[in-house]
Amino acid sequence: MALSGLKVIEFAGLAPGPFAGLILADNGASVIRIDRPSAPSSDILTRGKKSAAISPKVPSGKAALLQLIASADILIDPFRPGVMERLGLGPEVFLGTKNSPGLNSRLIYARMIGFPRAGPHKDMAGHDINYLALSGVLSMLPGTADKPTFPLNLLADFAGGGLTCALGILLALIERGTSGRGQVVDADMVSGTRYLSSFPLLGRLAPGSAFFRGTRGAGLLDGGAPFYDVYSCQDGRWMSVGCLEPAFFKAFLEGFVKAVPSGFTLDGWTPTIDVQFDQEEWPKLKEYLTKGFATRRRDYWTSVFHGTDACAVPVLTPEEAAMLDPSSSPFPVPHPHIFSPRSKPSKVPGPESLVLRPGQHTREILTELGLNRAQLTEMLRDGAISIVNTRSSKL
Image 1 (cartoon, rainbow, N blue to C red):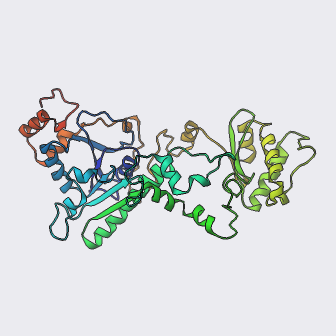
Image 2: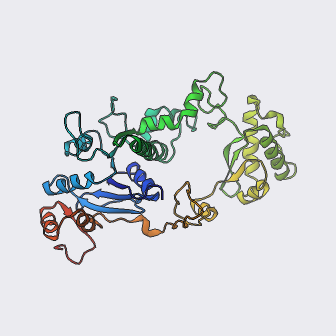
Image 3: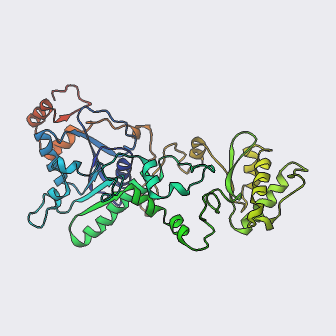
């Protein structure tokens, strides 16, 4: 696999950091999650990783971490600015400075925070909805006339955060292949979300853009257009409609008008293809589609549009979507799939991939690092480490 042979140290954190580590692990990297001794973990992004529970606040634990990071290719820091520096594990310790060499000049040191490092919010606590709010993107999302609606914590945490951080790590690895030196990757979720949203943000600035107009909910892609929306069906399930292009709208409307009950109209009105870009007709068209979809069950509409260019497909539940996935697994599988003719089929994730107990591999990892039984016993006694899955806590 592309990242086989690379060693990653991932300090335990919330969703964005573990997702960046998951991407690296899914592509062959050896990822070690550093947990706090005796602390629980709710992390489910654990596939392919190992856990070592080591405290940097105990001298022997810090010494082990310095040695471990000095032997690594990549470090993922999920903490607020300054936390790793106060622990004595900042990037200059490993990459060095102009006046002194570091412990690992080839280290890719990836730091992921919520707010821009140089901004006025850098020391504040926050979550996906807050980063999305400061990015300018939340104000553009669909919703009611009173306020926009936020999605699950996908845009800022995972796309603008974890995925963007993983991209930065890969770019730094390419640079290291040329220069031989490590890099600091600075990723923050506000800036990452803005970059991810280049199309709508630039569309907002482009004169006359039909996609994102000045008023939220008035454009083609933000809930304004009736031919780009979600509709409720008779059984309470939904259909998605995305027929933006005239040819696709024609295929959709012709199929829809034929499929509604005989004689169905909106006070005698039935839409024709020429109403698509007549915004004065949009409210009437949306009402017609809303009432029309409500006359039939979702699976009926699915069969009507299946195999056509109408750009109308059902909104599936997670369970239904899993059945359509080529893997038939309820667990999201790594993507994109990179392979050669000689590649072995990837293992489909199972329920065991959701659980990684803190300290599950502490003994294995530290033993590989060169620590002996006596040293581990002393570290365990001092609270520098914790070990699970052993018959005795005394080693």
